[in-house]
Amino acid sequence: MKVAFYPGCVARGGCPELYPATLLVCQKLGIELEELTGAACTGAGVLQEKDRKLGDALNARTFAMAERKGLPIMTICSTCQGVMSQANKRLQDDDAYRAQINEVLKEEGLEYKGNVEIKHLLWVMVEDIGVDKVKALFTRKLQDLRIAPFYGCYIVRPSWALGFSEHPDRQGALETLIEAVGATVVDFEGKTKCCGLPILLINEKNSVDMVAKHTSTAQNLGANAMVTPCPLCHLNLDGYQPKAAKQSGIAIHMPILHLPQLMGLAMGFSPKEMGLERHIVSTKAVEAKIREAQPARA
Amino acid sequence: MRVTLDIGRFNPEAADPKPYRQEFALEVEEYYTVLDGLIHIREYEDPTLAVRCSCRASICGSCALRINGHAGLGCKTKLISVMDRNGRVRVDPVGNMAPVKDLVWDMKPFWDKIRAVEPYLQPEGPEPVEEYIAPQEAMLHLVGVMGCIMCGACVSDCTVLEVDKNFLGPAALAKAYRFVGDPRDGATKGRLKRLNEYSGIWDCTRCMECVQVCPKGVAPMERIMVLRDKAIAAGMHGTNGARHAESFAEMVKHTGWLNEFWLVPRTYGMFNLMNLNAMFAALPVAWRALRRGKLPTPLHPKREGAEHVRRIFEKVEGPKP
Image (cartoon, rainbow over all chains, first blue to last red; front, side, top):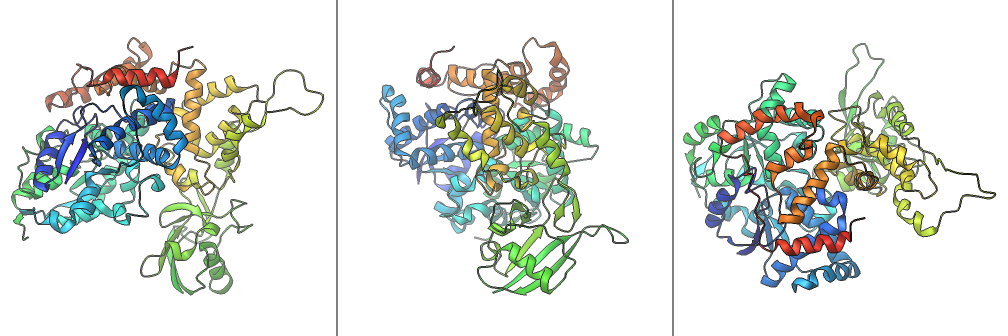
């Protein structure tokens, strides 16, 4: 399949390991990526604080670009996904509002007709490619990994903007893929809660307390890694984990994997190819388990 | 219809008062709500089960509970819509508040926070001869927030309150919006000033839990976002939150995308001595990122089409006052 690829700012900024890992994994999955190089930031919910219409206009511009190519948009970030899904719902549900926004886009020769689908790679794997086909690409069975899922707020809420009623599998997609790589799912209450990143620079104590709460809970439940489809969650859960351990007084060691990294490791890519050496929390224990992994049976 | 209610209970009068779980298997009608199920248990199975309710029609806001881990009204939720394929439903008291007994919780901290935002009109100037008049169109945006029934579902699932009990929380902040947004109120500036402080509007983490669980469509988080914008518009630029929002927008406006490297010092304030500690505290994090080759570059070139992004900003935002 071919998609208009929207990598988002963080996959090339604070989490530079995510972008190359995604390219390798998508190549294996047979997803042809046509990157939307001229698309702007979604606003990440921050621009929307100031002016929702402004955020919707920037996103409508991105949608119009993909619509012109006749392609669905694929994201690799829960925040980008959620912000764009919400904008798309407002634009699709209200023709008058869309016309108003299109007025702003006119000068660039763009118009959004309301026909673009926006999908996270997580959903693409489960819905468009199918778990069995994804599984057939795995060469390693990661049976020794016990993995806690961590979704990121915007890919789970508000549910009415995310197509859950038409696609009920989306709500458990991360668990489905953890099981697909042969690992054990460590279910925990925090998996759909906030990582704390949006308030990191505003109330660092609260933000870091959230990191401590989620990573230590997963650790207590026996997880040896956490996987997330959101690079913003990764920034906080990985980058601020040393501080979280210090602040909470709990010895926390929870490697955080990006979703494409987990897929790539099961597909036989090396930890280096997946950029694991760029993580703040050492992934050595995960790598040791991967070395011991059995070959996967297709 | 066969259903099993797995209830989180608590008896303060027990010898060793600790939360425990108890299951009740019931034969009920398909139209039964969670509250109907609980009342059925209280009437026919165990009269000691404590549950609070009054109107049974999503008006009074008494029966907020956690149903399968998420807050909602017992009277508004049909059992058939929430039971799993084995007919099981998990019911717990709301989160972030202390239980009194079983599913009844202590509302005092909830009301304290509502009171803290002074939830009443404070008009200015001489009293009019008749009533205070407000044009219809100026009140329409308040209809949604006036629908709040004070059930506490949003407070139950607020992710900030889980780590910081001082946060005013979604219900009180939505109530604050109701008065800040009222054209008859004369205390807007003072209200915004207080909301602008720690525990107020900038401490919300925008996780949308409150938007998701509110049974009346109040969307507290969206009201908090408007309060943030109003605080900035009223000239309150000196908080990390305001600087974060403004510098984020500036960066996207001029280049089309975000640069995390500059977001940090610009949020703390480039020459803000008050935040020197925070800046120093960020250095070890930056150092760790640098060593791992993941410190974002300070270079922030314009993206392709950045001039169009800038034009959209100017067109939507209009001329600066």
